[in-house]
Image (tube, rainbow over all chains, first blue to last red; front, side):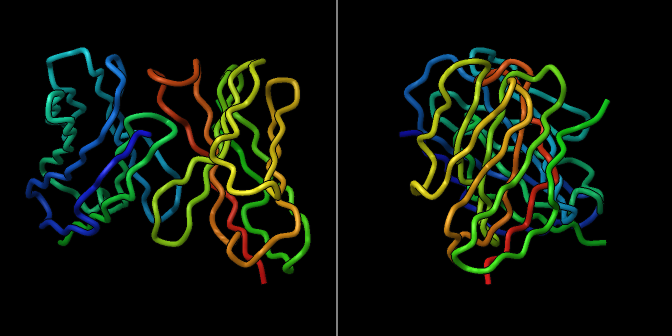
Length: 109
Length: 115
């Protein structure tokens, strides 16, 4: 069975600073995609970023980027220039069927 | 275009009653997923529909839970004889192609409270 571990239940960061959320997973698949989703207090879950496992290059989406280490099965999310609107729960998902327990991120003014 | 729509947004029911939760996916999305999110927890996968294939029911916690998807579009999640531990937010998501490479588009969820 696939497992996902998000080892930081809660984190906080000052506005404009950089924060990294960790995610490790276990899968027997060789070709797969990994996703980070964000769930703000409004409850609507939205996609943050997607990484294709067979690509060496780390995905980047504006202030969001990943550090993907395939051999280590690690998929961390880096948020640069944090904004108050980044306050949310962040979930890592190596497949649509398995989500991590989430990291609650608070951005402090 | 419209996003994933779920109804009702909130449902309060008495223990032992049956409830039906509805999900209307994005038009053209062939894959549909149901999840349960208990307070402060991650998402627990319940069931997955892909096109006309038999659904993946491997996440359903008991035989009190069932779901159907009519005409490859709207889906209904039914919980029979509700228990207090069924209280949670039930999220529905759809994706364009299903599984590996397609990102999920989520609805706002239905908050179910069993009293």
